[in-house]
Image (cartoon, rainbow, N blue to C red; front, side, top):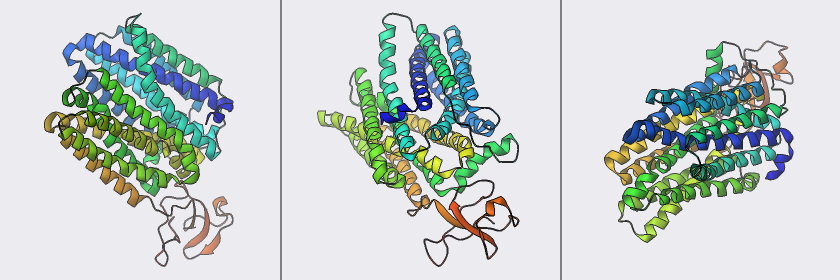
Length: 460
């Protein structure tokens, strides 16, 4: 897996991602302590609102980034967003009011919402080979999981010597280092974007791409399944550990560590699995495993806590982490396969926005249900949500998911460059190629009535 680091551009980008993640992790710890200093017992409500603001920033800003991707050089955009995040982090120690927390969180996360999809769209261009790109996706997942374990430990170590305000200095240093590494990477020139329309039309293209492409509709359903299972981990772990099992605070870290360990094990196994099986064959079974695990969580939290149930909970968290990683990690391959090179920024921006919309739904659902109806019912409701989403993905994603599709163009004039090699057919000109939604292809070909495998004209 580490062989991809021989690529200098990717090595710089991956290192930039890693140091920025560590900086973000330090900021998360410091922000919680800052909120407690300002709001006292209301710190939980402040952080909950801040989390909602984070999701709103992700959902609203990412599509605009995709729309502007053809106007701003990607490297310049990523460096600018890193510098913006560094400046906001540098201002955080001077925050003294709750509204200032909300404002700085929005600015910080808006910059992240611009940086991350641009970064994701750049990697497949730096690593054009499918095998290398798959390894890069697994490494990105490992980086996220290792950060979730390393950053809290680093923060705890630093807090033994300095005040939490110095953690924001570490965050600033991480983003500045990321900016320097991105600036030093030589990136391939992106393909020109050939979409007409203003910023709004370009921002809407990514959403239209997801709506029109069956496998991308399935990917969004899979994101909802992961969000349903992940919400009970990220929102309710502390409640499960402290209120149900009556274990000390350190057990919360152990449970979250089990989730991270499962995710890392899956990320390590995926490059080999994806050489033998298709994305669909890996992602769908993993998604259907999530509601089964949530059913077990409902049973565990409904029973009196005993030694075996504590071990079972850790096992459940590990399985949720592994299944979630098996769903999320190949998602970049699905997007890359479903969009032209020029449209990758819009596609990744749309996925970033739409997937976080799922979390915006499941986070409060997990919190409100647990507080009002208890943990077992919460696990059941989220499990039903995950099962419905996984079933929808299986229906939406054709089992015979071809890349090359025969289709007919009815509205392109004779001699149009796109019709090279096409032959006359009923209603227009027919040909076949790797099919994606773009300016020449607005709908997806449907199965022909006479056979299940043939395709009929779609681009009317």
